[in-house]
Image (cartoon, rainbow, N blue to C red; front, side, top):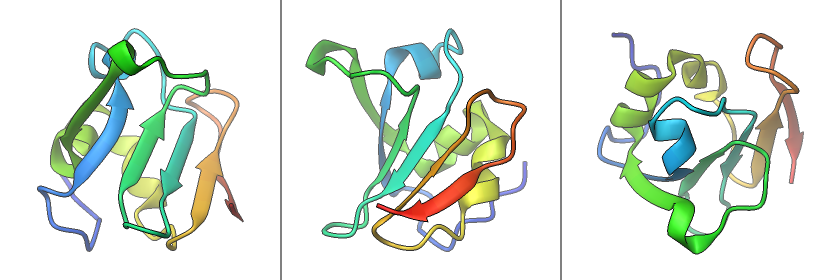
Length: 92
């Protein structure tokens, strides 16, 4: 599996149980400016009990299309309507 991030493979990612179980697709990625953490989400409000923390490497294994936003600067987001769409990147 290709890993295109410069971040360490053990970098923490906030995501959801639905994404980890592949029940929902990733449509929003955020690279937090304050702490450099990545958020990989399904585009809906996340309840605390649905949130998970996994490694960036695990996230890429779940959905390799996340590699397409590996160059996302701190403080930026990337989004798409459906998994097959291209990512749209913008400053958050």
